[in-house]
Length: 321
Image 1 (cartoon, rainbow, N blue to C red):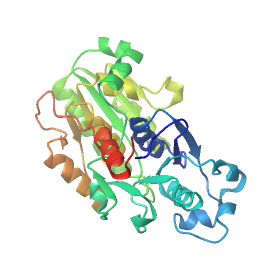
Image 2 (cartoon, one colour):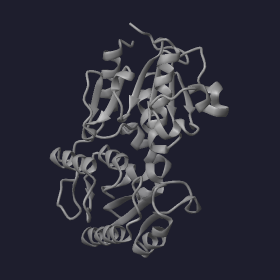
Image 3 (cartoon, rainbow, N blue to C red):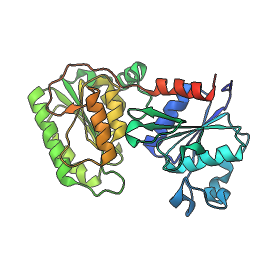
Image 4 (cartoon, rainbow, N blue to C red):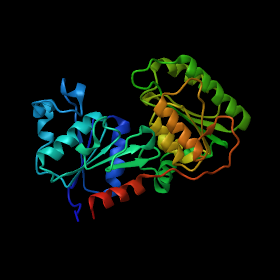
């Protein structure tokens, strides 16, 4: 058996918030001994990652010293650039480091000891573990911390409608009509239920949408957060205090984390979804976790919390103790 000990796990990402969140969540479920490493590959290696090109060490540029021995027992990566790094760590360590890659690396998963992907990616292999949604740290204690950090939200009139707004998917153009339709449908839901709103945008929300978002919820009791000028990001407080959540259809991470609260989760789809994302929505709906924005639901539903289960599977497959 392999024992995880001091500084025994490297978490490798490109620094993107969603990638960091997944990799750190899995690592923290396995060991408290974590070193976080951000890699930013140089071209041309960044263009083709995680495929190999000659001169791999030069791909790291000034960050070359970040991936040097002593090697950890385990490395966890998330994202395409991290997949390049975890692949190299496995090779450079001579197999001494076990490597786990989160999300489909787009090449043969045999280059890693384990690959963890959501089912809607469609990746199969003897060393592939599947989740329904994205990995995250959200459990009852996390939600309680969110309520404590944003205690004033508890004084807002109920029901409290949490509204999580994502944005453009990679390679797509801003769709103002889709955003306006989502905002109108969300306002209609609030009008039907009453109470207050707790609204937060993401890093991907187009700047051009922010005035429309503020206008859509102007005059309603609650909080509308559109950036750091509005104070601390209330995302943990929204998940902790919301009685019901509405999420834009674009974000697997936000939908997964909303579903982790155990509160009913809704979305509004006004345009055709990409194939993989459509499969994810269908799986959530089939599990009773995602609903149309105007659907009547119970006040509670089963929470989607997969990180601990995936961590147990990682331990079993890799022989970790």
